[in-house]
Image 1 (tube, rainbow over the protein chains, first blue to last red):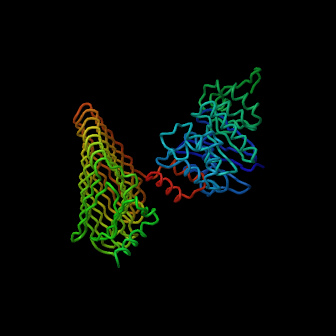
Image 2 (cartoon, each protein chain N blue to C red):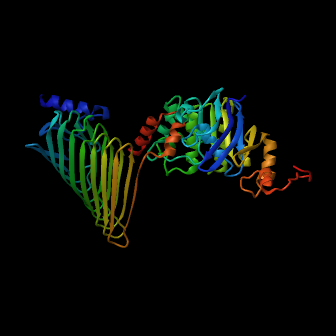
Image 3 (cartoon, one colour):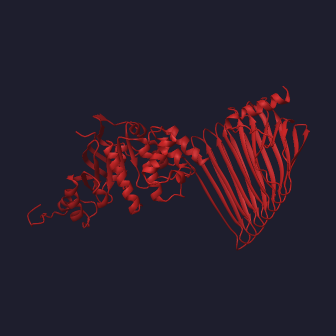
Length: 258
Length: 311
């Protein structure tokens, strides 16, 4: 049993079913990756786990430490240790970096803020008084968001596309931070369609069209993703499902029926 | 109450905002109703005051070339629940002079108080004047605030004014500032307010860019809740080459509050350029969710977002 369990979760938004009977376990102090093509439902799953408005009317359950999170609002989930880093961090006009980082910090002192900024490779003297607004690049805001998460000291971190808008050097710093968090016992869940991000994980889950296609080691999932998902020209339609719809018998790579 | 006690009481009401700095090198002026209850001048600064029936007239001069290194502290106010205070101000910042004013206007017990200001301000060529006005009102909003100013900026002059009311209820407010900018003059007008209850806020800010390379930024940031109402009329006219202006109005509206922004941009020269942006709405949901996902309640998250907007 994992520290965080997603149990038989389905979610329909409008007339479209986004998540279909999804079950996933996340293990304490491990780095997980949820990988899949765009539109597979990965970010939606993160929103469901975080309990964001519009993503709470689910079938199934999300369970933390053996207790259901049903009816637990986002801020309470955060106080229980779950947090989310967005693919595109929000901009806050006028709100200073130090205030933003300190807001959710366990210890709101200046030393915590400085330490968090240093860990993500940003000079506190240059950034603390700046605003978290459009004067910062997307990559800077991403690192500041990560600093705010470090200061919060959560138990479970959902990171949606951590490499989006980040240069190579900064990305390596983020990966290093992830490993530090893991060594501190934090459970990390990476949402990605990037092989580079996937390789940071210890366990991987492959999603397609709102379903869990496979799970296991990063090597196994990355092989499948690279060979089957990346070249695949269907749109979020697992091969078997597409074949069934088309009434076609599938064959595996050796020519045997799949 | 003696003048000293009145001055002390006025300053006590603004103590949480830092009050007034002390020292021989810091100029200050305290006015309660129509009575000057404290004053101190520094070299290069002249302040002449005259009591009138419901307030004072003040003639303020910063002499040519004088650079006041420390802000002049001013405090205007009324401690009783009812009354009127009318400040008639004539300000001259002479050539190449520089001065900052930190003004507190305090009405902590107001139930039915009117505070009016009529100002004529001349900032001569190459001079600089910064005026920061913070209002401290009580919880009942019983204040009518009517500040009006006509400002003229000479060539290369700079004028920055900030108006802030974040503590207590606004009551009713009608701000009207009009500034004319000669060549290379720079104007910044910033208003930051929180409206609560049945507060009513009307802002008219106008900048006329009549000289080449004159520049102006008019900025109004507000947060409104309950049944507060605000109307912001920001106008920039540009009638000279390379004049540049920008109008920025941002308002967060909660509950039954109503906000209206009317930016007016008038360009009369093909080489002038003026822009505007206005954003009025509820608190941005992504901002809210980000902060709540760090463990803050919705109310605390909204407060933090508003703190940023009004900073």
